[in-house]
Length: 253
Image 1 (cartoon, one colour):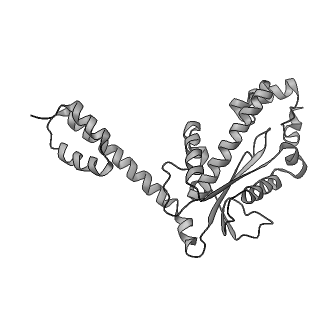
Image 2 (cartoon, one colour):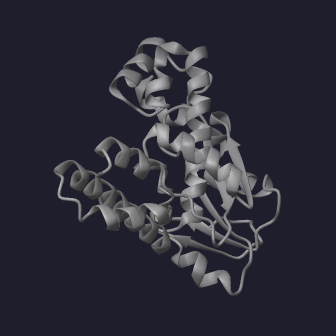
Image 3 (cartoon, helix red, strand yellow):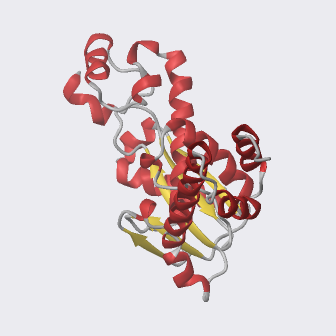
């Protein structure tokens, strides 16, 4: 007697990936539409997973290129260069060469809930990581580019081990003795930089939510300090908060 479709569905859901492949090969000869629909559903998931693994392998091209010469390759990225309020935050991350963190990508290409999950997974699986922050007042003092460099240096210093090579998104960091290269759009081309971008983005977003509780009139929870129309209007109405970058908002005051 043929298995019920509900039984087949449960069997496929509980099977390991290898066992599921075997079952799919078996059930694709079943003439029932419900079974064939299940087979196609899981085949589609398999194809999507294969494509994701291939994408991640392509994002390891820089790590593989320098792996023969360096053992602790660290990705560096920042979050928050453009906002009108809040700190600039940098992340630094070293991943094992064989590590696989599915759906890891440039933080701007990942939704907020997925970023939170990736943040935890990165911290759990990383060889080492660090986060550095520079305040709005310091940004006003030394300008945003120099503040970004400072945040990156702080992130490197905060790591549990010292890297021996840096892959940096878009720039090279001055006053760092470690060998490095800057990679344009590196957060979409390197798993290490992508991991750093997630660490920086989630850290900064959480800080802006905390600031929203202190200064709710500016909508930091929603805009994360960026210059939305509502945020700019609030600056004009209420003036600057202690966490605004004065050099960024002088035209609105």
